[in-house]
Length: 313
Image 1 (cartoon, rainbow, N blue to C red):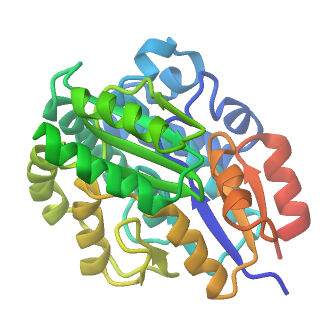
Image 2 (cartoon, one colour):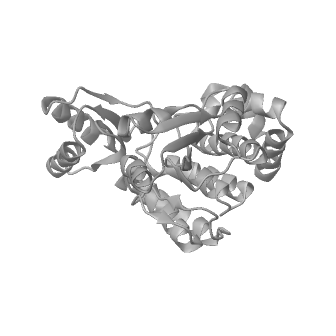
C-alpha cells in the first residue's frame, strides 16, 4: 500500500486565477477563501482570482494567496477522504503544511505569512539583494564558491535553496551574487541566471526579518501536529508545537533543504507525493531527486478529482 505525503508549494507558484475553479466547484473551497478574506480584512480571493498580476507578485500578498489556495485544495481533499502520513512545504509552503497537519488555524497562518512577507520585503532595500538559480553543479561546489566569493567581496552570498541534485538557488548581496554567477560558470555550471525576485530570501540578509517575525511566531497559537512535518531547516520530522515554531523562526534566514527533505521521506518509506495548491513545481523537483517516486499535483478541479479517485479511501 502506498505511503503518501502531502507537499505544499512556496513563492513562484502563484498565478492569477489560482483556486477560482475550486471555489466554483466545491463549497468547502469557497468557504476557505471566505474565511481568509474575513480574517485578513481584505478580499484576498479577488486578488487570487482576478489579479492584477503585479499586485499578486508582491511578497506580502503572494504568501497568503498561495496559502489560501493550498488550504482550499486541502479541505476539498480531506472532505473527500484523502489522508496522508506526513507533510512538508517549501519555504512559505511550510505554513500550509502546518495548517494541514492541524497545528495552526488557516487564519492565524495567513496573518502570520502576510507579516512574514512584509518583513522579508523590508529587510533589504530593492536592488541591494538578489537570488540566482544554478544548474549543473554539485551542492558542495556551489556552497564552496559562495563561501569563496563572500570571503573575497566581504558581502554575503550563500546557497539558499537546495531544490534538487544539480539545482541550487543562491542568495545574498546583489554584487556578491553577480560575482558568484561568474565564478560558478567558470567552474562548470550549465546555467547560472538571476531570478526575478524582490529580496534575497533564506540568506543572512534576512536576519532582520527573522528578528522582526520572531515575536509573532512566539505568540502564535500552535498545537501538536496530527502527522509529522519534515522541516525545511534540517529535514527532520517534528510533531510538537515547540519544534514547529523553532523551525519556522529559523527558516527565515536559513537554507531550504528540499533535496534532503524528499530524501528523508523516501528513506522513511514514502513513495507517493501529492502537491497541494498552485502549480506543479514541487513534483518536478521530486522527480529530479528520485525518479522512482510518484508525485501528482492537486490544485485544480481536474487534478483534485483524479487524486480523490486514485488515492482517497
